[in-house]
Length: 114
Image 1 (cartoon, rainbow, N blue to C red):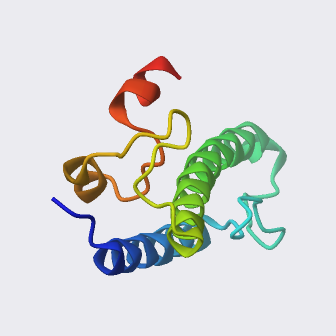
Image 2: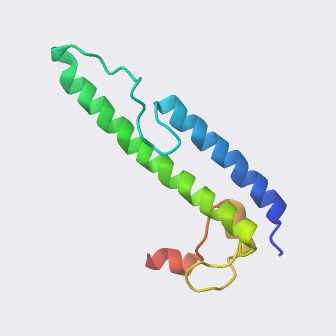
């Protein structure tokens, strides 16, 4: 089954928009950094809770940023003309895998080794 890069590109663009929106809702920039205008409370008694919330948001932002980076890498591979080719071993990534995970840049074998 041939890879439909137009469909994959649209899926990746939609996913990118979703991830950027989630980062914004979290109070983070597209680069994954928390914005300075997010209020965590300024009372001394709330300092521990504010620190815990900030730490949790940082972890979520890191996860979303990693997903965004994977989407951007896949979009770049479409533009370069090598989408669907494993970035590690150079074999073709099965279309079913790309349908399920359009941001995949590794075949299943290479992904399990990394």
